[in-house]
Amino acid sequence: MAIVEPVIRTAGVDGLLVSFADALSEAANRATLAFRAAVELAAWDGVEETSSSLVSTYLRFDPVHLDHATLRTQLETLLASRDWYAADLPDGRRFWRVPTVFGTELAPQLTQAAAAAGLEEAAAIASLSSARARVQTVGFAPGQPYLGTLPAEWDIPRQSQLTTRIPEGALAVAIRQLVLFSVPTPTGWQHVGQTAMRLFRPDDKDPFLLRPGDEVQFVPTDAVSLDAMRRDPHGGAQCEVIR
Image 1 (cartoon, rainbow, N blue to C red):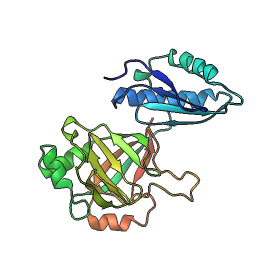
Image 2 (cartoon, rainbow, N blue to C red):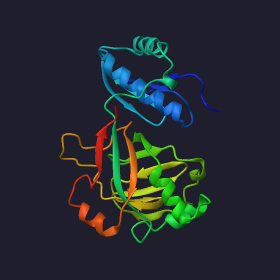
Image 3 (spheres, rainbow, N blue to C red):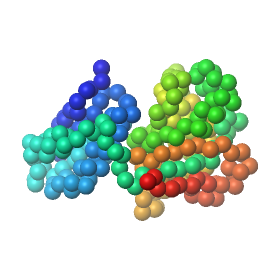
Image 4 (cartoon, rainbow, N blue to C red):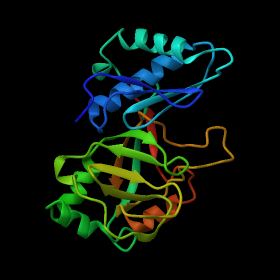
């Protein structure tokens, strides 16, 4: 059952977790992103780090200068200040258009994913490429975004068996979400598209290319064009600030 009010939980000796639901929804993810931005803006003394998951905001603090009770009171006051489920998303978000090859030998599981969604392959490509998906969180691997939420037909399960290796830049689908892979890895998600994006660049000042709250559209391209885009660290992707 979904949590209908935000819940504050203790997370170790130096952390608190604010959860807006116990299952993913657009409203809970919106609240999570907006609330984290507000905490960052508040710049409370003693709070050293914040991060966000699909439905929760985490705060790590210095217990020498701030205690759980004081921080909990600050969080309760901020939570009561507005309806976070209807809050505006943070400023500075970006909209990315990412060239993507759907299907072919580069993304060999499009056909089976389309069948699971009850779609012909062409309709599946049209659905996935027309979606403007939000980066709901970044995790599992460095810089790896989870994006959604897709239309209801894409509420398909992960595979029962692992794919032994999915490449960097692979686009995969399951449970009404897309995952864009930042490193080669085994996965149970279905590989439906391939991009040339380098999501994790450890030598850069900002090593993660995508940020929570960004929006992404995967624009169809062909394999020859995609290969030429591999020389671009963004893989041919273009972005603009959302205003």
